Length: 164
Length: 143
Image 1 (cartoon, rainbow over the protein chains, first blue to last red):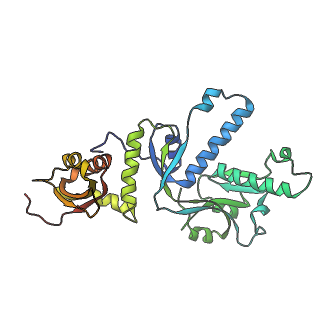
Image 2: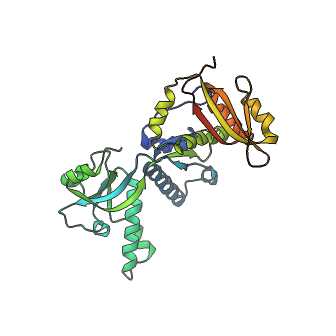
Image 3: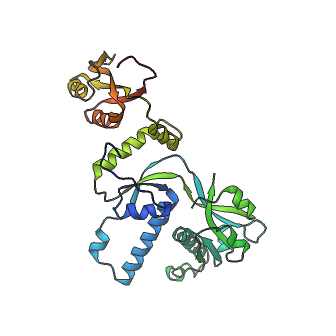
């Protein structure tokens, strides 16, 4: 770039939050979905490390992560829960305990963990925190062609992007 | 990652029953950037382009196609800041200064070399200039 001491780097959209979050790259342009996926993953990792007592206080204090500066107004899409049109599932909670194919494992886990907590809260005696620690829904990581997972019998439902 | 569309979903015999996240392209910054001033500067520049046009990617490609050497830069500034501002935009002969209806404010128009306009805009913002406009010059005899 001519009039500023900066370098432009092209990286895969899903990796950009990692590079920016680590502070090695200062600014990035990517989808809000990938930023949310990354942030959820980092939180999950921190929680696991805190629980296993492996993380040191210094590590936790180090400021990592990304923050959104502005909406650029293009490339809009939705990360949606999808099921076979002619299948037995009509609402998200029908998928609890089933197999879910997705490229967004952290967001999908977070989503179904919340659904499971809500469902458990509706049934007395099961509403305690302990019963919800282990997730019943199985999240299957797929890197592409996620929409084929249901037809091929790998998943009962998927969490995937739909463009607008 | 963005291979999926509504068409693909229907073709695969699927229907959406809930939305986890609504997404668009966003500008993100590191919570601990190595150079905060430049980060804010670039963010301000991108905001300048985004707020003016619908399709930023298209505009970026237009910017690359630089046609003329000069652009016309106009802005409002408080009269007391005028010496600093005109040092940044001295113009070809001298800057044109017009009084504004508002007490203590003037409007400045000045030709600026296109290759330095981004830096000039940043500097003008720095001395308190507002409503900075950059206009293409369609034709000129200004040598």
